[in-house]
Structure formats: structure tokens, C-alpha cells
Length: 189
Image (cartoon, rainbow, N blue to C red; front, side):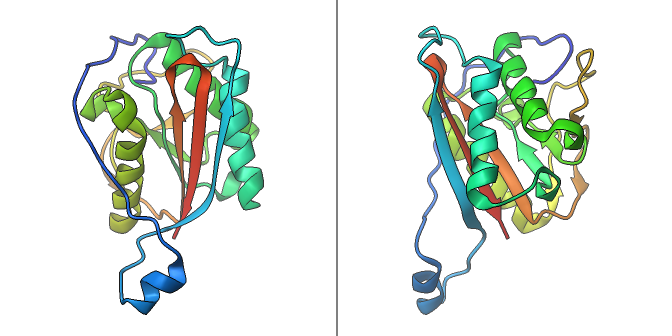
């Protein structure tokens, strides 16, 4: 994923679920709060073909909206769990969306693509990426984008090449579904 010469995606199976509750309720029952949802947004691209991702501008709209809804600036995002999966058109939609969202700050947040290691699980991809983001925040560690070798021309994304410790207070999770559905979740510690 996010590579200059993408090899395509690997179909996979998987599942994940996340318990979401009011912080006051979690504290009341003594649960560990792993992160807070600062904001979550979704958009729909009515012009997208049924089996294709959204236009990059539309994909970026969900990312921009989540930052606006949370009241965050681009340079406050530490890491991105991208939905890129090794298919050129999908990777480009996500990468261009991120570039349009972050502008000159695009290099600031590290980027990885969980689907590179997990495969493309379709409907489970979003929850699995969210689970990855929660675990990365818990460990204060980012995982590499498996299969990434070299960035495409004119790409300023800071793609993670090896596991490393990193301070993660805010993580953006992107999800671009087929047929034009896009979602973004912004997690904060």
C-alpha cells in the first residue's frame, strides 16, 4: 500500500469490534479508557462507480470534516491509519485525500496502512484499522506499511517503514468504501 508500484490487495477475512461508551459510565465502572472519539464523519460520493473508491477530493472531504468537527488543526494529528490496500486507484484516493487535507503539514503525521499486513477484509477493514489505532496509541508505537518500498512521485506522505516508538495523542483513521462511502474517525488520548 501507498507504494509507487502497487502490487494489488490480498483478500482476507477478519473481524473486530470496539466497545464505545460514555466516558463517565466507563469511569464509574472502573474501565480503562483507551482513547476518546474526538469526532467521526462520513461522506458519500454519488458519482463513484459501484466497485470503485471515491474521487480523491471527495475522499478528502471526510478527512477535512473530521478535523473540523473535532476542532483540530492538521499539525495536531500524530498518525494516520490509512485504508490504502495496494490497489492503485484506492491508494491514490486516500493519499491525495490526505495530501489535500493536510496540505503543507502532510509530512508531520506518520502514515501506515494496516491492510498491507492484514489484507483487505472489506467491511471489517474499518473496525480493524480502528483496533490498530487503539493499540498503537496504547503502546505508543507505530507499525510499518507492509509491502511499502518507495513512495509515488510527488508524494510527501511520511509512510512508516519499520516499527518504532512514537508519541501518539491523536490518530486519524480513514475508510473509503466501494461505491463512494467514506468515513473518518479521529481518536485522542
